[in-house]
Length: 302
Image 1 (tube, rainbow, N blue to C red):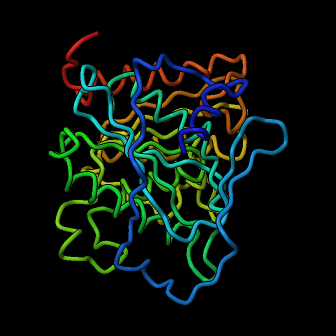
Image 2 (cartoon, rainbow, N blue to C red):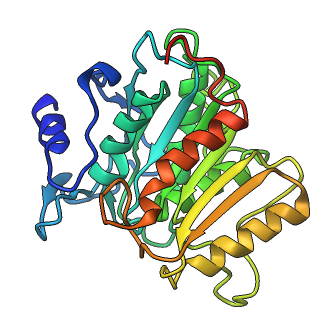
Image 3 (cartoon, one colour):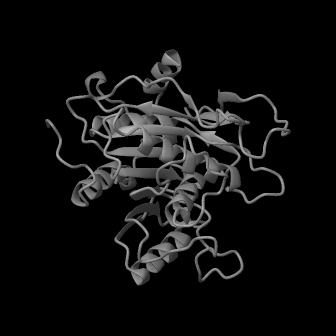
């Protein structure tokens, strides 16, 4: 794990941070020690990870045993905030580096405890694309909130950050948490809320209704109680930009706080990569938003 993380830090085109501003990740924690819901008889190819296409992106495939990995904020920078990071990948793979580990390291650098979610992929046959991943993110948020004191986290400042399909997953976690959990609750584990306190959505996918492109997807339920949202996307992301605008309008109509940035250039899938476009500034904008909204609290040092 340490060798993999080191390789990611020096990959070409990736952001890097001073070792003084990030912490070593803890050991990965299995989400379902009692057994993955509904998958006892599911047979998948072995999990694998690879970097291909000479793009510096590590891809994880065939996840059947999902995990969460905690990246604790440095003690002298810890704001008490925590963010669950959901990489993208079309619900087929996980782009685990530029939409995962690199993001956790950036969050650590601004005093935020990061939790990297390795959710189940690919899509399960006969089920909604997000069925298994939503179970995984709900369990993760509950576990983080349950162990908040142990990890020096404020249980009322736990957010979720997702890219592309991971952005859709974050949206579903944000907008379905008032409904029953999507899995049978374990009284020994699922004792606290699985609703995030806020969301950062970076080019989130699948927000538009396929049947009526003038509406958001009917699976997304926006109410006045939906937690605050920060969104960023590029105008050139033709497939998903309209859905982002529609989601923002739904939020504006219902009443929750929302902030949307649409950049002229950038395309889809930039994550934490350096692409030479203004959209690269999204981490600064997201940090400013989190601070403005009070989610970063008071840092111990600057």
